[in-house]
Image (cartoon, rainbow, N blue to C red):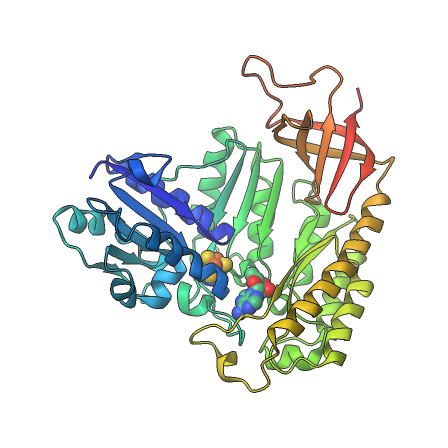
Length: 441
Ligand code: 5AD
Ligand code: SF4
């Protein structure tokens, strides 16, 4: 085997895992190709958070049921961990099934594949160490991910992650900070700290930093101009995190704090370990901060037993918090989870109805909040150029997309681009999901 192709589904943790898998394969002498047809080894790094995500990988594998002869197929990530060896039965042309807790064993698993083993697995979750590798093929030349904690020790009633990513393992602060310094030396300006629940980060070394202290330390790395983190859990979200953001402008003033529901009854049945009031206390910390902290969230509609009144409480929460953006989902029944067998599952149509109402409400809030920014100055970091619109694609510290024109630099020229630079942009237009503006020179 010489060449490999990889397709990634799911969250940023998965995207970053793929960067490490790719780095590992390259270090073993493989070459990455852009299309599965050209590859000897075809890998899917999968997501099983909702049923739809899980089905994607099986569609992909079905496409190659006949035409895949001569190729080796591997399923990585959350579906691999969840379905395990059942994948070999469902898709007999698959030869490798490995969950994220086993990636440290990838070189060894590759050797097994090369020697002709067609049933190679990495499915153990008994692993007390985070996957640390010097081989990471980063996708973006300016913004880099750093995993600080893997796995999840919570047991939200709807969620597969504790089963697919196993128990929590934090990296040492020294290893995180060394990686951040190395990235700064390589020219990266933005770092995104990753974990299923970054707030429960606990440095296993004697330094014993908690998340807020780690965040402060990363924010002080020379050359790193922006630091983001995802994702947070309200139960473990402490005020000190807000204090850290207030102290250092390199820490972006954006917090993604998934609420899931505005009803304390639903939250209790979801086993979220906080009430609506406790969640709102955290929102108050942010609203009272010195910096203008942008707040975003995740919401699930149609959790088993969610009444019309529960749902209305979620709608009312949107008005109260005024999120800058949210991800919303219809509840999806997942294997192994506590909610799987709950009575009173909500019908598909009713879930769709609630989702549409919620999204419409949030859209109006975003239109209003974004319009308030017209005329204001925002610092935009450039991520690329949109040839169709003739605008630079920028991002503000609050994580809004701010597309803009530059009077002296209307387009990339001779390979020179503004990507990785930052500009003061006057906002001139606002939509529900992005802003547009022009550079002030
Ligand atoms: N059904 C619907 N949405 C889910 N999420 C997690 N599990 C489920 C599920 N079973 C959502 C949550 C989480 C986000 C990443 O995905 O809102 O915060
Ligand atoms: Fe999907 Fe969750 Fe796994 Fe990320 S951790 S890939 S969102 S199931």
